[in-house]
Image (tube, rainbow, N blue to C red; front, side, top):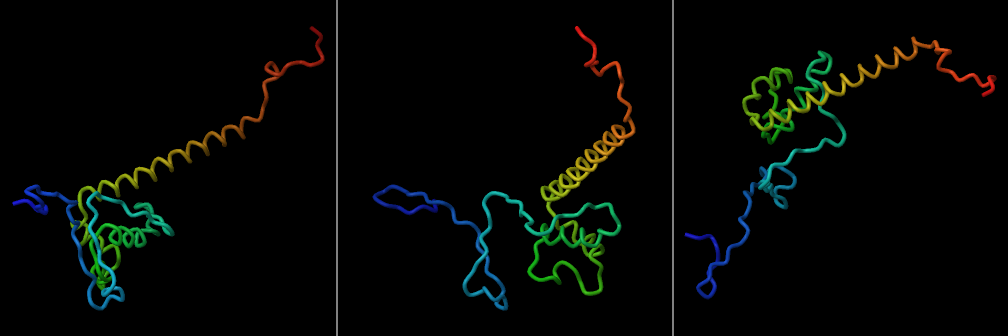
Length: 148
């Protein structure tokens, strides 16, 4: 059976409506707003914060806070982290909820950081070598006092 409308024996097909969800009743916009599921996948863009690198110990909690916020379905902070958990513990428990495509995005973010780190290391090395090599080869400097 077609979802379209029948007019003069023709079935008019319209755009399929996206999934719609309501906010919980305690949400301040529950009576005026809904959530519409995208038909094509999108990646949220962070405007104020960035996703940190996974490796440094001092940023691990912030890293484990940011990723579930972006990639795990949630309605309240308790869906992401229990009161008696660290963000690291909560992330490890909820990691299976992250889709394989989202995990690929997370890995690509880490790869981008590694590329930037390697680029910066190479630049520092080149600059260091240039500063250490302050001698100028006199053979390569043209002698302006000689006449042709």
